[in-house]
Image 1 (cartoon, rainbow, N blue to C red):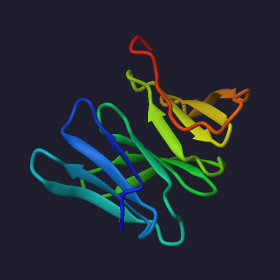
Image 2: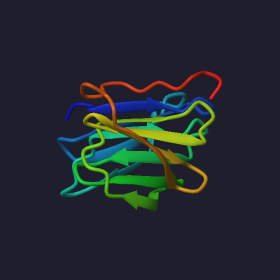
Image 3: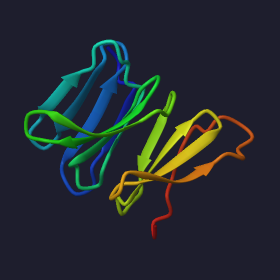
Image 4: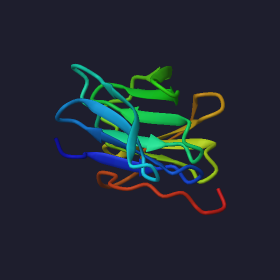
Length: 137
């Protein structure tokens, strides 16, 4: 199927992709042109992905939840799960200490060291379609 979301790690030559059609999330090594690790989430359609700048943490937005994983050599190991519906846009901060998840007109911000929600931004007039952190975050 087609790639529905993509992100790149800054410190490693890896990218993450997700395909909602076949329910897969894959980590690609673009220096070696190989798929390093992949997973199929049967029944759960991944909507969005975000990769930590170091490439070892992964956020995946699903229709009914938001999950965070450790990226291991042969699997994704679940760290935390939040009941955030339809997070169609995810983005790690440049330093990797925060991750923002946009769902509709709401943006939830989580701390990646404690996996707690640190802020919820609710006053957007329209659907949030992109997220960007300041370069000095």
